[in-house]
Image (tube, rainbow, N blue to C red; front, top):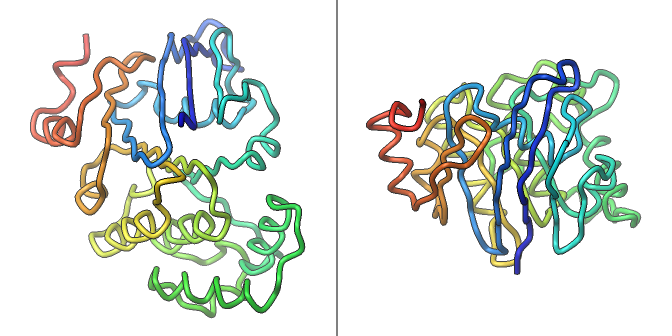
Length: 247
């Protein structure tokens, strides 16, 4: 079953209508798959992720985004999240005054529409934090405040595991991480991944891919996916760069 189906997607920048970013992008992701998008800076990788989530910074001028067969183009961000799509951020936000535990509990209840069983929820959070090598004391700290870059990225993966979406979009989750942190993030993705969900990873590096079974790698350049292959395509980019794909 196709989870995500993007057809001829075109976008412009909200603050510059003459700036065309996505220029007819097509992408299909099925249940059980891990997809990777790579590409040079400014090619539209993060724009794609943000457009799926209806960021006000980008305006869709053509094309459709379908999720589980439903057209979600232009649907508000909160409704998209409730449909079962999750996105991690390149630079996770800090939220003073709200603890990590409060954030996770409130978000879980908002997504599911059901009251959280506090005992089961607490055990689940503790279990996942242990698997991600996170200090459990962090649950009582303000959300991401004082967290290292690596802990913030692990927190993104923790949220993904707790919310258990159908599709997880990870926008450069590996950026700035050391080798050990990348291994932990990869472990979290493998914990999440199953035959009924899917993952879309946006990355500049192949390090995070070494511990993952990747189904498809896409090269995005100048607003379009110009080549798709298996994991060997990522290795080709690591060895040769993007010169072949930049005009």
